[in-house]
Length: 65
Image 1 (cartoon, rainbow, N blue to C red):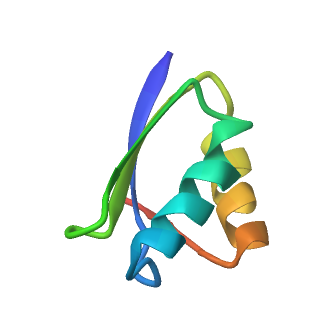
Image 2 (cartoon, rainbow, N blue to C red):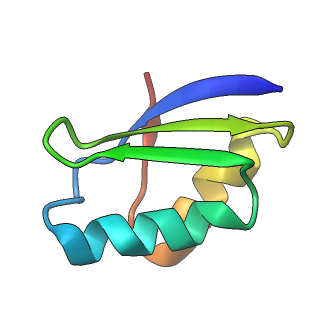
């Protein structure tokens, strides 16, 4: 299982955090959001492109750190 860190600059509130968690929960085994740092740590076996696509679809494009 791989762990990756994704920066999500458009995540500003608890509602945003919930949408990000929901978007990633279907493609990741573990999702840990740090709202203050605007990052999410994800553990998954899926390709990173799939994670980024899920975020994009939810309206929260991310960048790998």
